[in-house]
Image (cartoon, rainbow, N blue to C red; front, side):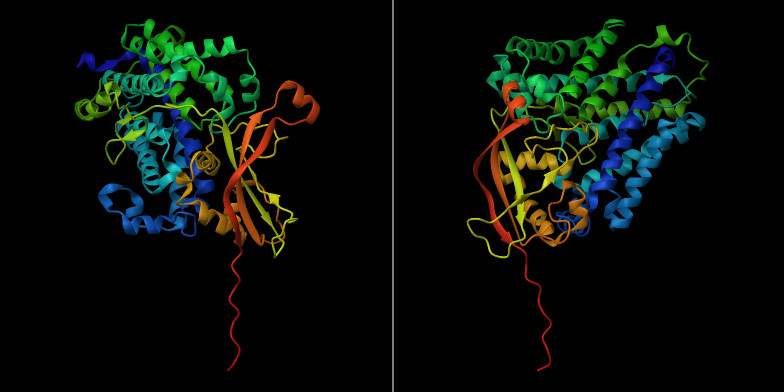
Length: 478
């Protein structure tokens, strides 16, 4: 079938696949390095407990067959190895069917991780990576030209990501309509980056331009993805440029980079690539498989499509247990003030008015006012992100904050590895507490005078002091 392939998109496919492999690598690395403290057998939300209380059909995956921390590590590091192989182009050296298997493997592995990740994996970019990874399975390799149906499905996904994000903003918070949200957002976003302070202090007219440009990119430009070239390429390029602006202004894990990856699949690189290499006709089994997958995705798309036009639009929702087609969105509402949970401990056995408390340092979230936020994205610091949600409402932390504190009181090594600074390197503290502070950026005069990027003010207690459990002593002979 001549209509089935797009010969000129061989380089677009290649660039997209290599970029997606890089994102997969970061995702698997994040899982491998953090899982023991978060969801391991002795973690804050252990996977075995989840598996015991939930049915198989609710979250199918490899860990339904067996779970141990060692097996999880094998899955995560195998995902890293496969991602590296795909980044190096291994799929181009194997038959078409083997390339499909190579791309299916990281999708199955990461799906299995997300299914047991609980609140730590409740972010929209997890579903976005799974949906993108599923479509990538059927893109093929050099044994055939890029299939048109999959390329259009990637555009449909990019459209839903951008248009959904634009609609949720317009519907969700009046400041987006008034073009004033960025007066607050750079300061109150989940995890600021090293340039966020400077973005926050841009003149307010610049913030208005930022916001208006965002609306155009998310509410108008997505429709141009379905127009002929080169208009579609220009639209995708505008989206990629907007995402790079977001990369500079904050830490949003791999959300921005994955959106850029999707945009790269739309751009027609043929003027730079020259004539396409000779590619054999697609085998019939492959064409039938792609047609069946396209029909499945389009059938499942009716729910996220209805969500886009609904007045009760929701964001970041999966409609099936395999995360094949999902709803997306970001920042439907903007916080006006920044609250941070500060965790402190003391080694004094009895708490009194003059007790000296020492603060735990987190890698990404604001803590020490003198410390400039670091750049971590596309790497995802899951604990730091959940601490931001906890400051918004204790309900976000109900399931895991108590176990987190218990592990600090025990001096748990895996938990402490998630932190930047442990103020009790010799022995665990006797007590741990948590307090909520209001953080705001200092201005230029305050920064010069104090060396502080943040000014913070105590607001309230988040958790009153909790004591380290007294170990039971063995009883002597009667």
